[in-house]
Length: 215
Image 1: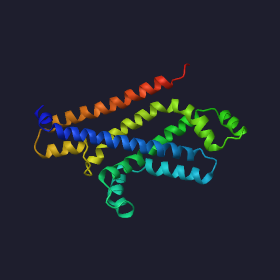
Image 2 (image 1 turned 90 degrees about the vertical axis):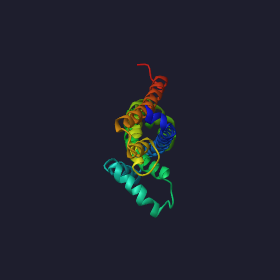
Image 3 (image 1 turned 180 degrees about the horizontal axis):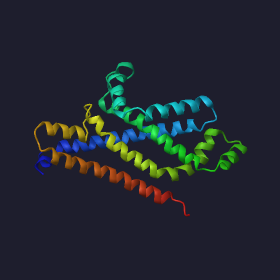
Image 4 (image 1 turned 180 degrees about the vertical axis):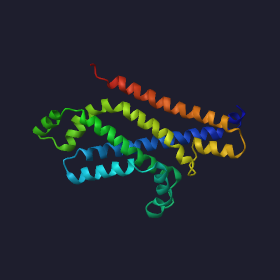
């Protein structure tokens, strides 16, 4: 208990750091994932090819390798002097977007094709059909897989701590280096992760109840 009380500010900052990186990465992954899912079901072949390549490359690339690219290659090419927070968000967001894309695409495939055809018959464009007809219905079926994806994102955020970003794992590593019992450090860190993952799970359960369809 002493390790928590003595270093409560550090644990608090690590907890907030994990919340921040999880939220920003989830937002980036959601925006990119929905866009890439639209590419994958697009009638334009180059967009479908780009979407397929995006998912194939990112889903089959180890997340640690993406962090190495984000921290040691991206600053040299694009974002000079970018903070660890920004670089970690890019790595986590891009990686997770491939999983969000496949979840959204599976939801899109559950919407009857006739609805899209009916929308096109009254003059709606592909983007209008996707935005106003297909995605609102697909959302109901993708909430459960998205919950699992964002919970996994929370746990994956621990990798950012190994690259100098101040989140829970980074705090645990620093305290362990000071000689504190690692079992107690990991206990408090695990409880903090549980609080975040339970909050995500609870939020998605509320969304599922509100958007559920009576069967």
